[in-house]
Image (tube, rainbow, N blue to C red; front, side):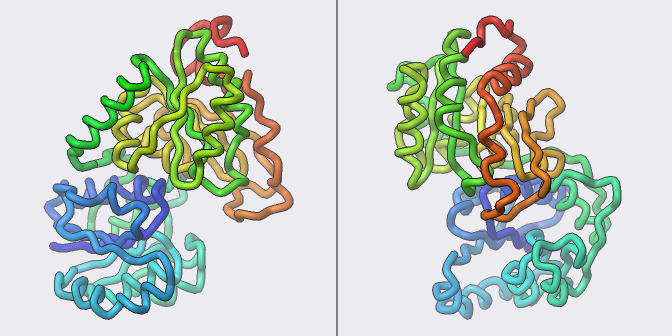
Length: 340
């Protein structure tokens, strides 16, 4: 049997969909995946995937390439396509794929409810399911797979990226280190660079240096964290997405907001402290009971609007001592050694 996974973006959401790939593989299914460019490196050369179909991000580019892409997708003759995003664009790709069945979330559970019209088999979510990973896995009931609770994140073997990560850590003079990732999401979800700088100073008291990671367009943000740290943090060299994965594997701790870098760290089993505001950590936060979350809950929560007057500024109410205490709990160290 052959399945098509449609999860176009974002990086964190693609990570949260990887257990679906693992569950299908355990039952002998072959799988392909349609994804946008940003998250594509997580899937390329994946031993559990047959084909990765890249979808351009811009609507104009999609229109130019859609005919050839759909021809390639349809040639695979998928038995079922899973729309795991709940949007018009994801439902359209699933419906146009030529798959014999098109399975997706029912209307109440979709980000764009009317897009359920394109799904041939809309499925309701079990009432006990909270985390988005389990919401994804619940759709596999449509093909007789009960995998709710599975936390397996199959990732390719990136030997070259692992070597680059080792070299970066060595060149920066780091042995034992924490990752602070101040960016990676829309502004309403992010914590202040000054807060991260204060956390770096507290971690230095634990003899734990901080490595500030950053993505495209975030270099100045990383510079602000380093400046606020008073020399307790160093800025990472530019890295690819897969090199960040390998850095996260080597870190003792990752501190980040509800962003792709945090979810990658969770997937590879690195201890994390998640910093949350408008989004709900019960739905898309760390899933290990040992991991820690620091949160301010706005009245609009859970809220996924990028601009919202209700949750604007809520992340600023989170203090560095709170985050340091969470790091202490996660690392199991004396709070007196993590003073700001």
